Length: 170
Image (tube, rainbow, N blue to C red; front, side, top):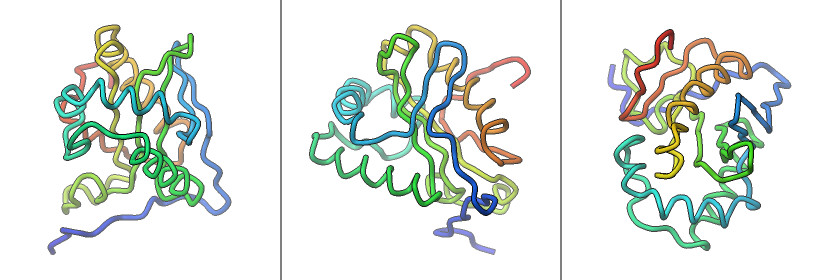
């Protein structure tokens, strides 16, 4: 069967409320909102190359404007509210913006294939160049592995970044 173009909805229990805040060691993530606009625009625009290299995909194609990103953040807020996807702005313990992480339904970011049908969620992330240099790319991957299994009802997560850290036990 050809699964191209199909998106597998997130399978969430009735009445499920996703966490709006997540913490792991010195990483804090919160459901992204319009309040993150300035940090997010600066972060994205400073990170175009590293996002392409580590996360892959076609976004962002170019630097983003505040107006463009505002619409994107509202979309993420609505998706979060409706349980269609979960996007988090990520900060360190000192409230410095690090980047974003995404929990999307299978097929939205990564084309759905028969091999990917067994996965419940497509997890991806990016961090700023400074955060990458400080080790937060790997730290966020470790945090995401914990959150996807402990804070969400997902049984099997697919990590779709182009660059997956080699972490023992992960």
